[in-house]
Image (cartoon, helix red, strand yellow):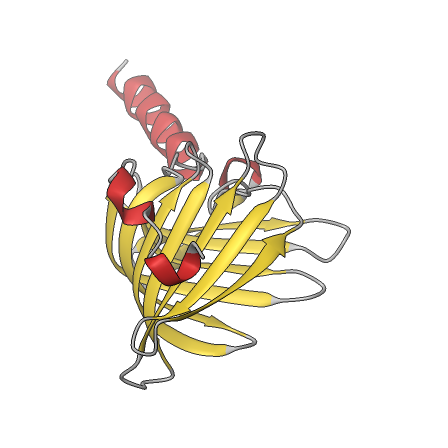
Length: 180
């Protein structure tokens, strides 16, 4: 009887370790981001529920701060991107012509693939169209890093701090130069 119990417990633990965790797409984070435009360090506020995002970064080690807001319409199908150079008070706007995607939308569709960083759980997703998603999770719901590769882009984010939950609404107040 004890042996059967231990085998059952081991099976439950193995299955639960292989189930992708749930990570909130509403969060505040300190991170480094890398993509085809270079490396940026700073704060990332993502509010999928409210269909908005803000990234405050320094680019490639330069001291100038850049603020980037993406605010989608009420249906989440398109929106506007505001890129503001805080020092020169110059804001460039351009339309967003795609729906809002959550950072961790592909996590529930991924599979456990072993360990990352020696101790954390790695989850992978790949599709036939050349999209791949990798996410290293510490504990139940703390992302360590995430990488997304599409036929058009490669994006990597390394988290140094992650707080789940909707960021404060005031973080999405645009500066005057972006509302002209």
